[in-house]
Image 1 (cartoon, helix red, strand yellow):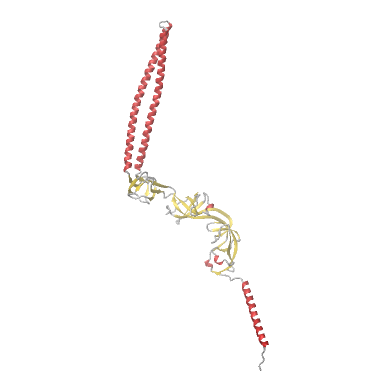
Image 2 (cartoon, helix red, strand yellow):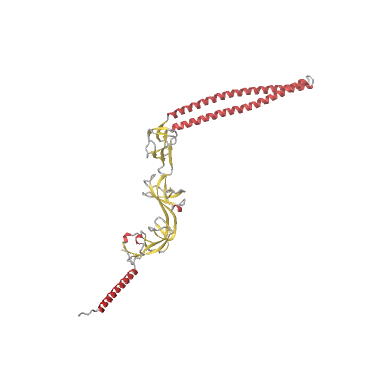
Length: 417
């Protein structure tokens, strides 16, 4: 008969529990050990990153912006009156002189107004001449009346003086003498009145002639205007330069003030730059500028800063002080670099892909012996177009990675291969 051995079964169960427990403890220990290990260092190809060396010395603070060359002197020609374009004589791009006729126009109504203005001036001048003759005749009459009054008075005055001598000898009575004196006084008053009348009449004559001359001047001004408008039907350039634009075509009806053409001097240019509004705060009048025309560099200086912001940029006008290179012409696209200031004896490096001025970033510094790059905090300062100041965190000669390293944000160390 078989005997059941229960102790063996218990031993086997205990052995399984011990093995399972040991395996679980080993698994937990292995897991804890793996978590305590540093993550594997990622490998990065050296040619795939952009690197630069920290330097100490003079740093040029600059801002850059695109722009165009524009004429310093531009003349827009507008229609002086309503007219119809008959002929276009010059095409854009042609070199013109002040008397070069660009467009011929016509206006029959204006021609009629010119004739009427001429007739009005001629009639007014004839009326003035007639009035002048008439007034001169009246003035002569007044002079005759004055002369007669003076003669009568002088005659009576002499008679009074003679009668005074006769009255002393009682040749004539005192009554007759008094009558002669009264007559003389009356003639004296008449003479004074005639003299005052002559002065007043002379002033009246001058006033009438001035009024008539003013009317003639007004008509002559109108005639000059009509003549100028008729002359303007032959549209002239008005200055030496190049015809840049012609806004009309044959048969077109124009209204007064409509733009016809634009003339510019191609040898007198300036640059209009568009500077980002965040950088324009440092731009000042008189700062030196280098203008890249793609065919040479032209020196200049800032002469105007637009107070308004448009599409995130500020317009900066630059006067060109250096000679223009071949091919420079209006509307040519250029790049301008404005020198803000010179910083002496500072640490600087190329601008990181994601670093902003006056901020702190974490950059990878390269250890050339091991080939690893360790991330360190770096305090940035003032910036320029391509470089930025280092305030703290780097030393001269350090090699740093400037390209975008956001793919390795969770790593503080990478290996360059």
